[in-house]
Image (cartoon, rainbow, N blue to C red; front, side, top):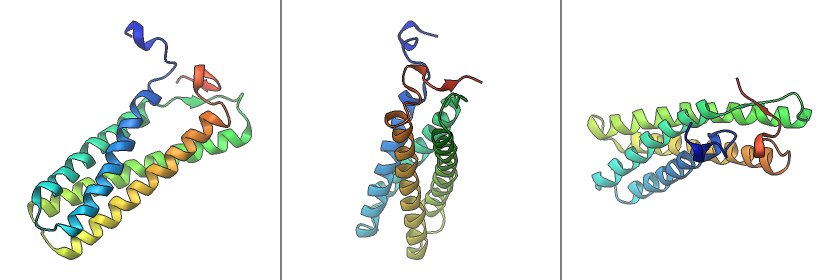
Length: 153
């Protein structure tokens, strides 16, 4: 591990912010496509945000550590919810990415745009919920900073 990374007990906080931003930008760009339906570059931009955000979520999931038994029961419960919503975010972002690609290449129907928009908005909502749980773990229950209440696998 490079020396500059030794100051960080885990890499999750370093990588998790990228998919948060990318997937929320996907929501905004997808909403813009509803007002500019002929703008194919905007749809490709949404696809780019989705695919990179989806990969980022996967990296964030795999860089996460596990909570130790020293944490409170409420923190453990919240950690499990955080993990659950993180996985849901991955699956929804993957579905949105695939559907966005399909609608770019083959099926260009307005009703499909509405479905894609709904899935992308759901993905954005899951990002917000997951992030809120993560922030609560760090700032309320002190899980994660300086390696508190975490264990490596």
